[in-house]
Length: 143
Image (tube, rainbow, N blue to C red):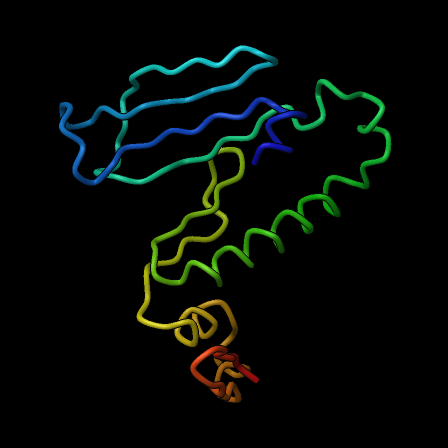
């Protein structure tokens, strides 16, 4: 996030589950250039965090010319975010682009369940979890 914040306008909007302030209020932390601003904002969800990235490479025009097509860049970002969905299987997540929901997943009980959620049903039938290791090292995965 720090690297993305250096080359974009980055905002975090958050509300903790046990927040003591009034319902419907959260906090926004934004960074534009060297300026950092924290303020209270209306927050529709009961709790959670939203990360908003705008003007990616807007302040680094030399980098902008090396970007691929919008479709290609969106594909790379989508793959990165899908990896986050896999790693954080125990949390609700939603990916949005320009206000439109691209993918929304609910928390599940295991990594296997999250993989099954993200793959099509035909492929999902062939998944095989495995686990091996010792006291010092555990290896878990899905084939």
